[in-house]
Structures are given as structure tokens and as C-alpha cells.
Length: 428
Image 1 (cartoon, rainbow, N blue to C red):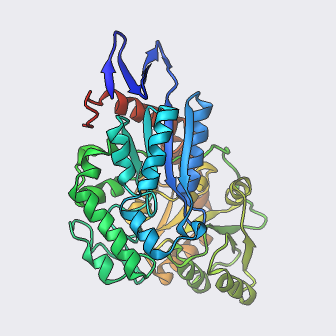
Image 2: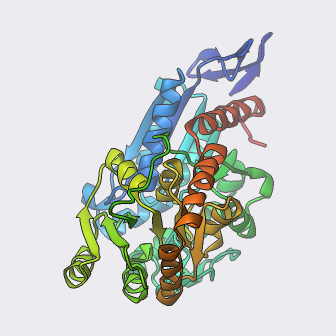
Image 3: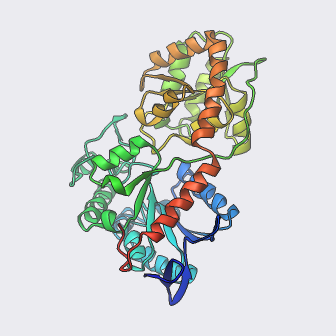
């Protein structure tokens, strides 16, 4: 619960009274942040953001603790047991309650509650008087597939629908009827009982597009804030002009546009350029086959974060051919902008909006290898223009995606979450 004292707002958790979100002059009093996250079978962007945010906050003097759940596969859960937990995970709620009593957080920051942690954790935090915020790493609150993609194409059949039956009909979660029913039941139940309206103080959308989509799905606009991700600043780099190449970095899976990338490259007139591919995934064998047939393609495997910055920095451009909306501007785009390398992205509004606004790259038609081929051909013939976009790419990063801006936004959100909490514990 929350109470006012002579200096500001205090938090009462487990019988202890502590000031929160206070300032001494220009100094911010350290806060306690409890991160919640459901891991998946393969590491993804949300995991990177969780760790990145934790480091930012700890380096700024805040106390951060993370409560994570392993994936259903790693926990050895059957589809039925995993599905039941997606609706309401009593064990996770009890574990959260114990962590709140012990750690006494000022705010709970939920990164991904699905599939096993369940949105019930929002209600636990709310009941215990701790404000909760949730980052929209994907579109899971509107689409059980989280991608708004079905059969390889954009699908918004469930957006704006209270009963998201299309997800069940098409078995959109892992092509499983039982799992799709469970995820759909979770969304419907927690919408119906007000979990997302009353137990989440703010949703943190990574782009304006994500905010607009969630608002179309019924979440009040005032509860959605736009806070982009950030990446560490490696400093601008110079392209390797002795062996010029364009680069792809990421998981080698279908929704990342691997087929479009390879077919677009094979159709382009890329004289003097090479395509270098870094990453791993289920389509690795396809990439390796193309590389064996085409001597202008190099497959270099998985890269560490430090190696990624060097790899991108030396490239003339980085290609991001994703087929799905992505929860935010992909981290691969942010890293490319950070080193000052222009990007070539699909024309999905969620990805290209800020890139085009900042003059930081080019776009091509979604799932259109011929369109990508035209852009690659153009890039290979306009070195001066591409070089000029390097300054725009770096400027875009500095203006939008630095750790300093990210930290300031997080601190402001957490402080306001605490300061605007009513004494009853009910969020605005």
C-alpha cells in the first residue's frame, strides 16, 4: 500500500516504510525494480532487453532483481499443464508474493508473462500495492502467435476482437489446438476481469505503431507509453571499401525473411558487392546451400555482440527483411544505426517508419524479392549516396536509441508509477 509522509510518497511492503521515487536536489534516490520474464526455448530480443535494462539500472545505482521462468520444454511440462499455467499460474503468483515481501520493490516490470508465468502476476503485484508496467516485446496481448502473422502473411483477425476465436480455429500457437485454446482463454479471461486495465499501470510500447495496434485492441491510449529500446554505443565505424559487402545478422528463421533475402540477392545486379550472413537457426542449411552455389555469399555463423558491431560497422548496409511487424524497431536495426551503417528494411510501418523519417536507409516491398533486388542494385551503383546516409544513421541512433535516453525514460516511468499510485493500490 502507499501513504504520504512529510517528504513525499512512501511504500509500505511487508511492514517496512520506505520513501520511493524521491529526489535530493538533482539526485534521484535509488529505486528497487523487480523484473519478471518468461524465457523461451531460444534466446531472443526480449532476453537481451531484460539484461540490458538491468545493467543500465544497476550502473545508475538502482537495485534490480529478476524473476524468470524457464520455457515449458526446459521445465518438461506437458502441453496440458503448460496451457493451464498460461491462464493462471498459482505457483508463479506465490513466488512473486514472496519476492515482493523479501525484496520490497518500488515497481514490478513485466517483460514477457507468456506462456507460463501468466498475466495473473499483474494481479498479485496490484494486490500487494506494487505498481506494474509491461513492455510490449511482441503482439502477444492481441495475437496468440505474438507476430500477427499466419501462413506467412500479416494477419490481424484477432485485433480488436474480445473473443479471439480465429487463433483457435487456425491453431496459431505452435500449431497446437490445446495450446491455442489455453493462450486464447488467458487473453479473454484477463481482458474480461480487468487485469490489463486495472492491474497494469502502463504498457510500454516500443514504437508508435505498436501503441496504435494495442489501442485498436481496446487498451486505453493513456495507459500506453512509447519507450524505444536502446543498445550500447560502440561509436561510429567506417565501411570496408576494400571488400565491400552488405550484411544480414539474426536468427535464420522464416519470419526473418531469409528466403526473400536469398532470392532478392540472386536477382540483383550486385557487381562488386558481397552478401555476408551472420546468425543461426532452422534455415541454416538453406543459407549454406545458397552460399555453396553462389560465391558472392558468405555464411559466417553466429556472432557475439562485440563481433556484431564490428561486422555491421564495416558493411555498406545491413539488410532487415523481416516478414512480421516485430514488437519494436529490431535490435539489429538499432545496432546498425549505432555504428552509422544504413539499413535496408521491409516497408512494414512498424520497422520502416523511423528509418525513412530519419533518412537512415531504404525500404522494399514485404516478401518481394524483386523489390529487394531493385534496392540492392541501386545501392551497388550509388556509393556516394549510401555513404551520405551513414551520418543520418548515426544521428538517428543518437536522437532515439542511446542508453542515456533509455535510462532517463525508465527512471521517469518508474517514479511516476509510484507517485501516481493511489493509497488503495489502484492504478490510474
